[in-house]
Length: 227
Length: 256
Image (spheres, rainbow over the protein chains, first blue to last red):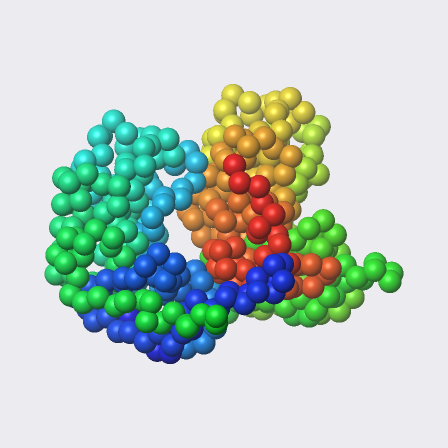
């Protein structure tokens, strides 16, 4: 489902003396439907960078990134947008929303985008918000003023609204209490059971052992730094 | 899929000064493209060339018309182009007063565009005008008031209603949120996003506000000195800019 071959990434900082930073070199990995792979490695090893490249947010210098058979490195913006809408979900660490939009609509939006009717999408959104213990009195408010943990749970509800065949999860259990962490882990297990291919970053080791089938240490793709 | 608008090698000079040079891109139905760049980078020149307000020195702008398929709007006759700008196209100006008739009531401003495409029944026109005022969150009780009595944000929303009432397929916007205070901007952006999604509009938005393009545009084109220096998916261009100028632009934004 997700297939990377010989992917590398460098950042060129034109305004800082054209410094070239090599971040990742020759990454190859495959994730099959129903499988969850954890990215590990120290901070700065390139875990989030790799995840953003798979989402098409960062550009790869070389190699192929195939999601559901489509190479995102060669794709046009509209093709990447279509993949993101239908195939590839991404739960980032931070919620980014339009001001004024109620929480319920924030969560329902990915479903509306794939053509689901407003009522059906809202029903699904309500169900997820309830599962994640967001009090009903907050559903009609914009999440911009919510606490960090509440925003993270809204973000997760939004990310799990549409049953994407492939998902990227960046620290989905960070800043959650035990009860909500449990809800998120069971959402991940349900997604795996329906056949989603998942790549995750988990600092929470117990969570990682529970939901992930294998681990990839990203630091082995980090180019040796010149002394 | 046929592009809705296909721009090829558009060049426009003002004497020895280059407005924009060799700009080419295809925009597909449902896409929203942002054009950013500093003042004088040629983004408004380009927009006006595409919308038929300026005649480019070279190049073509092929638009997929409803009746006759792809047509070059640069070489078509003036009446044909005017018809397009009343039906399939809409143009939202930065200053609402450039896009409105200030001496005519709000309802009249919306109704005029309907009459221009053949609507004649007064009751229908008025009903549709009221409906559109409500869609852009203007109280229906203000239908007979002139835009001179409206706030800046209301004028801008009225201009949007006037433009969208005829169901265009492509909307050109020149700094649609410029000059509005931030709370009004947020409301307008939210409104535009909803309209773009619900009506399946394509849009080209010229702005220097990167937050506006992040919210509204799927894809982004960066211009400098009349040239396109970078283009791609909006979040990719903003989060991983490749060109020196884009890097400077993105890193210059003040964090709130």
